[in-house]
Image 1: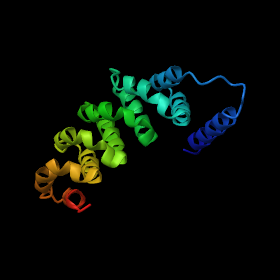
Image 2: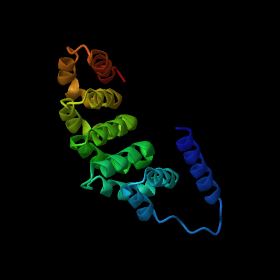
Image 3: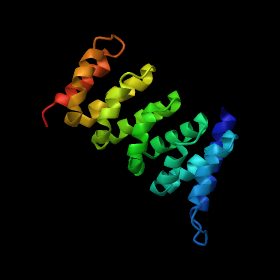
Image 4: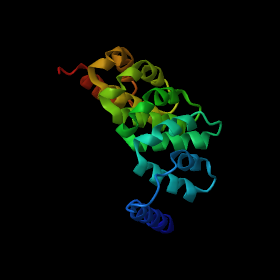
Length: 185
């Protein structure tokens, strides 16, 4: 664990100091994003750090990776998009569809990304309502929080949230979401 942390910090420092060079050419975003396919975790970690420093221009190539046949590649792409947050809001349609992915890790990252977008995730409400049936409780939990963060534009979800609120495990999150959705603005 310490070795991994030290390595990650070393990569971050190297990237930060390299970013200060005036003669350096701009990064090849497609190549860096493609490194998320690498089987070596240290290569993927370095790529994620670079992508986070690149920001929004990495969104389109990351969205392409969401179509990769390998679940771990799709998960890396979805988690990186989530890490970019609002800088990657152009990924909203793709991440909405990622809620239907066969990989739990992809669905979870998609739900967390949409949750972070808050009200900007309103176009995803129909898909979010469907995702309330996800077999994984943690995915459902983030979907519920997302609907609450969207607010009144998620009012179509209230009947389903009230139904889910009967489940002791989901009651708190569901009730909080309904309260946020129905709150006067």
